[in-house]
Amino acid sequence: MTSTSPPVRVVYTEAVEALAAAVVRALRSADDGFRLIDQLRPYTRHKAGLAALRVLGPDALAPFVLGGHRLDEEDVEAVLLSLRVFPAPSDGPGAEVALLQDWATSELLVRLGVDQLRLFPDGFVSVPEQPGGVWPSPEREWPAWGARMARLAGLALPGLRCPVYYQARHHPLALARGVTRAMLRRDYPTAARLVRWMAAVEASDPSAPHTTPATEAGTTLQIPPLLRHLQIYAGREWRSALDIELAEHMVGLTA
Amino acid sequence: MTNQRPDDGEIDAVTLDHLADAHHLASTALTWLDASREYFRLPRSGHRDPNNDFKPLGELALAASLVMRENTGGQRESRLAPTLIEFAWEELDRGTLLYEQQLRHPLLTDLMEIYAPFARAGYRHAPLEELLAHLTALRATAVPEMMPNRRLAVLNAARVIGLPLSADMEQVAERTWLGGTPEPWMIDWSTAYAVTHTVFHLTDWAARPKGLPKRLQEYLRAWLPVWLEIWLEAAQWDLVAELLLVDVCLEQPGYHPHAWRKLREAQHDNGMLPYGPHPTPERPEDAFTANYHPTCVAAIAGTLAVSRGIGELARHAPAVT
Image (cartoon, rainbow over all chains, first blue to last red; front, side, top):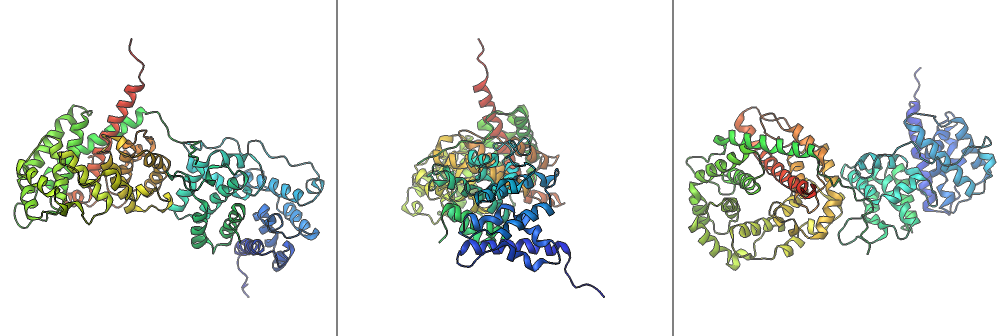
């Protein structure tokens, strides 16, 4: 007898999309209660739900940080379990993203009232000063610089301050070039991630260049038309929809 | 209104590598154009289509006239360019064919555009100029049904020939796509060509960078590097060459040495620059039809890059005491 279950990888991918969808819906409406634990229930056979939680990392907490939902004890336990079950890789391409996302998750949990000692009893957690060593030059190597910023877009959340945030803030032209390149390549997921950084900078710094309405010379990008465009072209992919939704929240475009 | 450019990203230094690549590109492109003379020839008989038949000769003349204007090539280029324009002028029966077609099609502007590089190089046809002076003074030619970037081409041709302009070039530039400084992420392939030509005509092929309004220069400095990456990745060599030519038309070019290198790598050993990623046709006449345009652009872009680069180097060279 052959199994009709989909391959594990498919289940995991779907779990990430489903959790992203739930987070988007929770951000759009604070009326219905949102609990992380409810999102994990369909995945009792696999650890896919926990893996999804691990992949989304700090984004999974956005409904509590931004959307007015209340984080309860079971949800905290679920997040901590996901970190234990899927420890961050210590090297390889995913290591930097995992390390910084874990830092961001812990920051948000502490902000939501969770005791820091519960999170990392071994005494983890300060932001790495120079994540991943040397950065590509935002002037000469802006495509590589932008690709790295896109991978780290999970850190683009209100109030999170780390070296990656300052990269975004100090290099608006490189960021805008990265967005423009991704848009022209129709790589909308990357574009959405980079626009999210633009939104995070604008949200944190009213004098940041992106906040000016298109300058006469058009050397900065306006965020609202980008987000509308992305919503139409990429809004059906839930992870991109989540990036777009968070960007809209940060620049105050949500209803 | 801020206009911050905190990490304004260009490499300001002219590199010798990029000059070598640009020189090689231009020099070998001219060699190929020279070797392709027989394909540039007009059909000896039959009906002529003034829109299309003269176009290759016009582009050859443009390239040659700019090489002559800059006069920065090696000895070979300095010798080749005048012989190429002389050849093209002869093919056009020393301007008489342009004149006859212009008489027949008084509203057609292509003929004046083709004539301009000849006039620049000192090849004049008095009856044609008299006719053009009459036609360009008519209200009928002052209100052409024409895209603004094309209008700039016609106005620049009139300027080069020495005719009065029927419109203000800066005002026309306002109505181009570039003039609107639009979202740079909305550009497409054909719009990119409209942008490049807007720049070529406003600056008269890099002769007067100040002819491009400051705000458009800033806009291009911000986004040209992105567009270059996009069309380098797509191996659209003709458009890459035109974008590099745009860069050279700016008051402060970014130079983009890696793009010059890729263009040189894409160029065939015989000097022909392929239009894009598709294989070059095997028959020489088909290869010519497909690629004479990008090869003319390569000759122009390389020549102007060398000229600008040498000028920059000279400006920054330590004073000899």
